[in-house]
Image 1 (cartoon, one colour):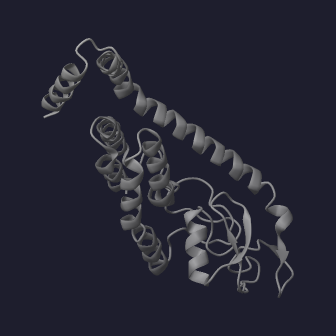
Image 2 (cartoon, rainbow, N blue to C red):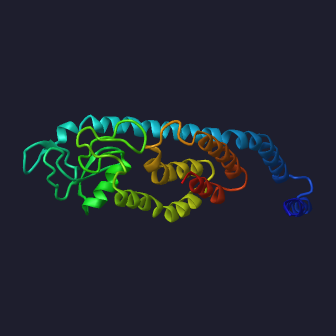
Image 3 (spheres, one colour):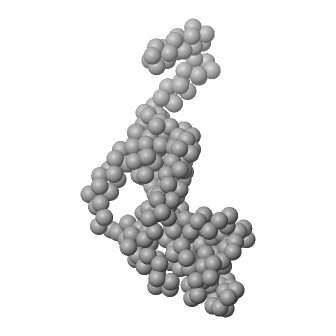
Length: 251
């Protein structure tokens, strides 16, 4: 179909301008040669460029989080009952267990916002997504699903109801993420970068923070090979399918 359309267009141009005085056919030929040469390099290197951009983006996020974490100690507030200094985003005092009414929201970069949490469970889920204790808001150190907060003794995922709510809160984002990923995938290269960053922040990060290096090692590497193939598919055929597939497979 493409060759037929090309032949028809060139036929009309030949009849209208036999000598190619305005150089339209010459320009079309130059564009075809350019695409035939550059297109091959684009096919192989666009995914690599996209991954390098993503590595740089997440590197900047890491530095910003470290910057915000350095200020958290200064932002502690006294417990209303015992006076112990606690995080303003904690749901309860780690010393006496007194609940905190309307704790501050903690942003995904680690910065404390002025907005207040709508409910205790909502705040607990938010803290767990950031790998923090749902009680004191302190970081869980290490990797795994059996982590224990040294400050308040809370074990990660020890509460079955909260664990199910945590998994459900991430799963609820899946339909929206797939739609947004498909729309972003329409944009060449930059859409791939934005789509991968988006679904990794929304679907992958809440679980990946707790995975050890050895957990599902073979599965993760097979997944990476599939994702590379999908990245090439995105460049070759279209990200409207490839990027959502990447999001779904990661989830």
